[in-house]
Amino acid sequence: MGGGDLRRGFATLERGGSLANPILRSDDLSVALLGPGSVPVRLTIAMPCYNEEACVEEVVREVLGVAETFPDGAEVVVVDDGSTDATPEILARVASETPRLRVIRHEHNLGIAGFNRRMMQEARGEWVLFTSSDGEFDPREAVRFVNVAEAEGADAVLGYRTEKNYSLYRLVVSWSFNRLTWLFFGIAFRDIGSMRMLRRARFQTIPVYSQSAFLNAERLLVGCRRGAKIVEVPIFHRKRIAGVGSGSRPRKVAEAIRDLLATRVRWLRLCGEEPGYGRDRRYSEIVGYNWIMPELTAAVVRASMFVARSMLRHGRVNAGIISRGLVDHPALAPTLFNLGWVSFWMR
Image (cartoon, rainbow, N blue to C red; front, side):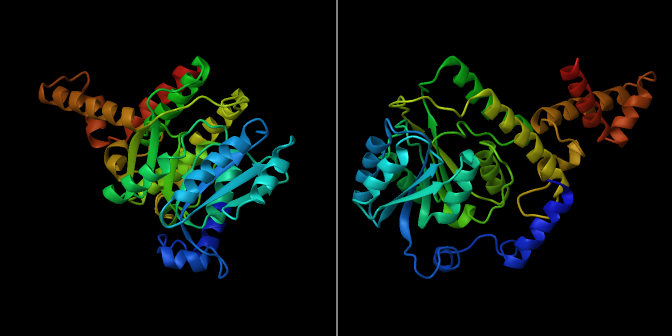
């Protein structure tokens, strides 16, 4: 997506009023975003589903059991992302038994990004809990998540798995994804791909551009920039009931890395145009135009400045020109650092 497309997108958002008032009250949302015929509830439990015929009925019924006992009302929304097995028939049968379950079907597989976008449009709850349809997460955590959010005054509650029931390959992918997000954006999350609960009024109006699993991280990162309070709590990770997950396939990983890099560049290009995007003020003075690994670059810049000033104080003539340049133009340091970093990876 080019800069012109982004600017046109923001112009559309501004005409809709979402940028002028990015955070809407719950009562405003029930009318403006749900429609006059919809009834808001306290919690929406959102589940993506793709070819899960072996386990989807058991998992959905477990989640419905939690929703039926949830105070102030809860709904369960399952997005069938273009399943080609018996999953649609199973979901239709279960949905016919209870009004608490809504099933939304995509004719074609749109991936986790398509699911997330659709859910933020369809959800009626004040809170939206994102979980899986393979049984990896305990839906009873929903009650604890809401209690934690109210006690802490949080806008999002993220569960981090204390012990992941993954293969070594998936453990490496998960660890790398969390660390790269911290290195490139300076905001640390323990487990971005885990169960999470978002306050709809805070996150529904955030524009996101990623087309991969990185969309989850992008929404949280922009929310942090807009002042959202995020709390992380430990959760237990169960083994998948049946089937094999597809989120860590090499193609999916490559797509997430692509979106991570594109988002980092976008934060610089949109500086001042959209709340939540743009250069981080914490680094802008010392990092200048840097966009690769802000935490590490900031440390390098501080060290370079310290060495430069020390050289000037001790009259090191040979290094005087370089030292004076770093002191007068600190943006040169991260630029040189980035060139060195790119050169290292291109060797």
